[in-house]
Amino acid sequence: MYGWRARVGLIVPSSNTTMEEEFRRLMPHGVSLHVARMKLVNVTVEELFEMEKHALSAASDLADANVNVIVYGCTSGSLVGGYGYDRKIAEEIENKLHIPVVTTAGAVIKALKKLGVKKVALATPYIDEVNAKEKAFLEANGFEIVSVKGLGISSNLEIGKLRPEVAYKLGKEVDIPEADGVFISCTNFRTIEIIDVLEKDIGKPVVTSNQATFWDVISELRLGECVENLGRLFALKG
Image (tube, rainbow, N blue to C red; front, side, top):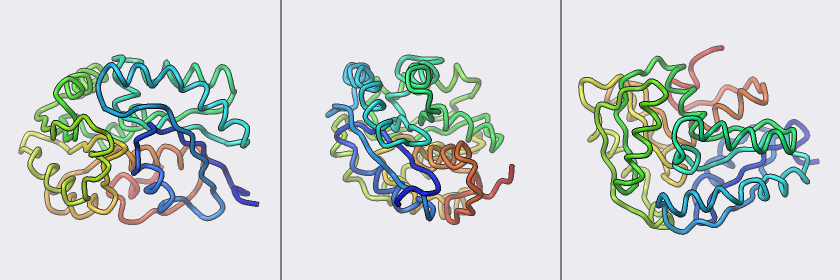
């Protein structure tokens, strides 16, 4: 039986081509991944709000597979509504299905706090209106955003085509001396190959959307995995 150890239910935007693949590469032995999708073509504030309306339906479909945790796998989509929006999404699903929920935005907040990062350099593939929402969300959660750099891409399919070295270069460009760490946002932005090397080159912690979400899932499932090459976050104990 697949998923004899645990089953992870992942909800992603319909145009996301990255998160599912990165999760499959990282998934521990005995843990299965089951995926549902919500309609989204462009990463705009309007489409992100519209997408969230389908979250409960997608989660209900995953519940039929008897998953142990449900992941709302979209960074901007779990923070676009401002402070507490991540918890609103999670609680709506938890209250209906009685399955714990991890949101990417919530996982990122936990990861940054775990690493002691207070002054954040924010790197994204997004357009300015989405960057503004993300900056406001992080600030509302107690972080100081000391620099922001986005790539200005609205098409989520185009974001998914970006190679890992684009994330590396963007992370390096956004880093400034005042920053405690770098956060590279977007679950459709391929990053897991560059986290370790970027941390070594800038001498600071690096958090990415998929890395933080996967870390939170492993914590929620209480799996004692030792995951290598995913940065300082996975090197921390407890």
